[in-house]
Length: 73
Image 1 (spheres, rainbow, N blue to C red):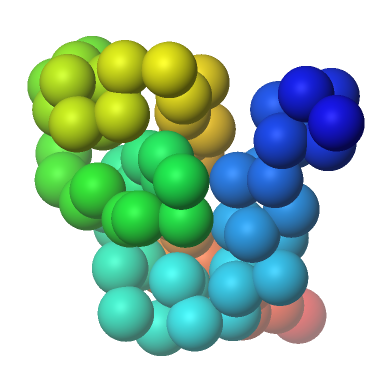
Image 2: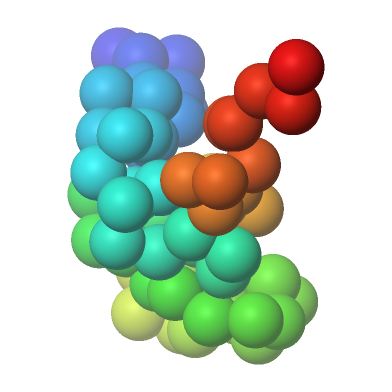
């Protein structure tokens, strides 16, 4: 059970990645207990997530901008 919880935020990020790109493109996102922390400093976001959810292991990812997916051919 603990193992499943360990990766639940990573799975949440994967499931909601398209929405994250549309809403937070160009930012950094840290997710803890399915709550999203958004900003420019990943260390600061992780610290905020750990303060709010001390027993959680936050997952973080830089969110690409929608135009980063454009093909230049």
